Image 1 (tube, rainbow, N blue to C red):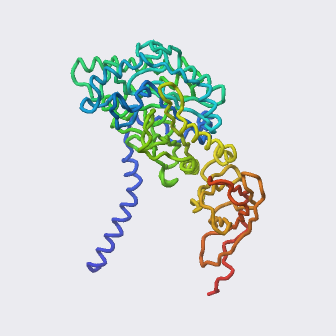
Image 2 (cartoon, rainbow, N blue to C red):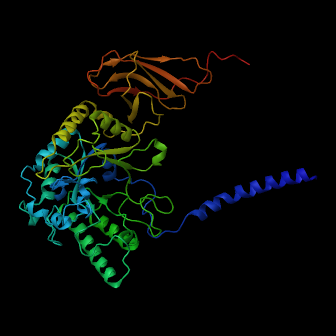
Image 3 (cartoon, helix red, strand yellow):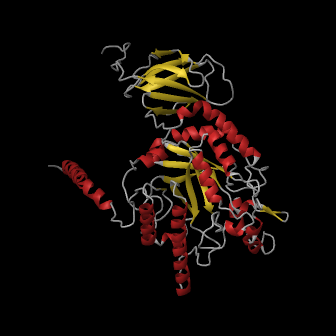
Length: 493
């Protein structure tokens, strides 16, 4: 055997050895984690399936930060309005934090009407609402017995969380309770890891306080379907791996079926959302805040939602929208359909003002969305990823044997050409418009392209669009195609 042959055999032998070792190496890559994911794979219970079928939700950010609305004494806060308490002393009004911490004494939302909010959400088509029980400032919109910094000690006095829960329950809209781990009002709160005995003792008191409030919320509002956590990125909280893991289990035991997203806690390696093995920690992925995945592959089969603001990054009420791009109903419908086409939910945020009124611009957006949803909700609720490549016209969703195409880009010739891969198990048999149930002409078109992997179906859309909003075509799917994949015009060689 010459040198060239020897090198060749050594190369083959090393490749075989590497291939044989690969499964063991993959197993070795799996880290033994005590506080990682509690479950591998998606939940299959009825409560989670209900969450999965929502499609569209509403988020409400409301608290005493709505009183300043991003402005005070002629000065403007340039951050997100709900963060205004953190306004720096250089740019803020004099003695700002003390001023802010006493704003609750002015909180008397005389225009607040939970029933009106719930009706607006219902008319918009929302199936669930996420409501801020307590934001980072620590002010509680329920009369918590563990602090005096609550709605009970305002001029309003009444339990706002209860009013919201009762009103939305009455409309058949599920309620999820937002809760901030950050609490700037509590003396034991620390952002950095406590190091001194004093700080450690103070943070232990804060942890007990946090646990007590979460249990209080679940007991006070037994119909709430889940907890939506925020502010869990602080180093101090991330280090509490065993404690937070135990607390999550306690909360779930207290409320069977409780839904908690991926941002509550970290594993012992400090990983959030996904543990060190890449497994989801929680019931759904919450990493899609104000952004959407580009493809179904990106979400890796996980349940997920996107929470979206109407202006760029304002969750709570900000009086000045003049310099912001305000998302239109068309924008939001596009984001909604992008989300549901990839098995996600889409949640739109509203920030009521200090008196409890939803601003007219947001109310108008909700109205326009509701008008669209009233006609097209069938393409949203309970639908799923179609298994097809994204079409140029818009987005597919699927439910049973029905394929929905939400058309954003109407073809100039009035013919929607649907490309279905030959490998797809079902074929369009007939089509109609969702808006008026009008039957649409559907024909199979042979494009005559060599080795093309698609079959084509032309759907004639004779009607002119009644508005500038997208419309939906429904295709009834039959069983497997009779096409055998041959190209009849191929030359025989």
